Image 1: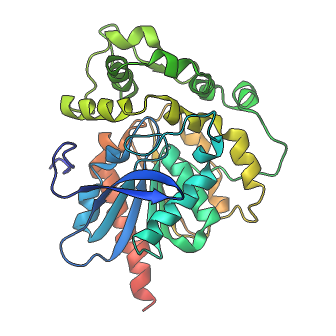
Image 2: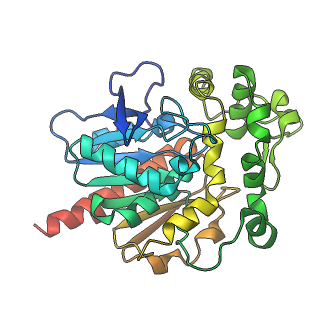
Length: 339
């Protein structure tokens, strides 16, 4: 049976809320199960995504009895998108994201949360666990492996691409300023998102190359992605059109900022029970990037799905199945055994 999902336009199971978090307005999706909820789960999206990117997972968590919170992160959707400059780039850093997630949990009366992320969201949730370990009871990441903060000499993005990860070359393009200038209308945003979500042309054209970035000339040639309906792509386009691309791309300009802020962290290991779900066909967050991450965790569970970067939508039954199994055994099974 196909996985249930939230209707992006009209679904009584979710409400759209806003909150002032440390002086900035955030939009978030909020959902409660029938009856009392047994825990609160925060789901953090990445790029180019928004809170509704968890539409296949929200019903699964509600079925398990969890309250669900999915924020639009800084720069996305209904959340503020400060322009840099004149605003500070620190608004898009990992530390600020951790501070804002902690504040939203406080406002919702959740002293502890289960925290999950995908793509940039995966990177964020690991950092929340480092900055505020007491806030997170259980942690999971889909696609995104853990890269520990380092006190070694700072490595620029240019050198990272040149010497270590050539398939991260797209980040140079995204951070350059060219993309937000080129993707400057609703139609272009829709074509861009369709390409990023796997739309292909008749001759196999694609809209994205990990080594070089966005392939602007190909975008109008691409057929509709099979991963989203027309209604869903229209919704995404409208949400991205609120602020344009600039805010979402600021996340790719924070490497040095994050490095400097994380020099203050005393620990780089994570003792919180953690689930990592690898997408074996991810062309950017490739399997070898996760090799060795076990040494940073005291309780790491690894799973994998034969899916692309968009595993949340492409293989929702498997992803949700792993989450349910892990929560019922490692997470709440562990909690029951300690009573």
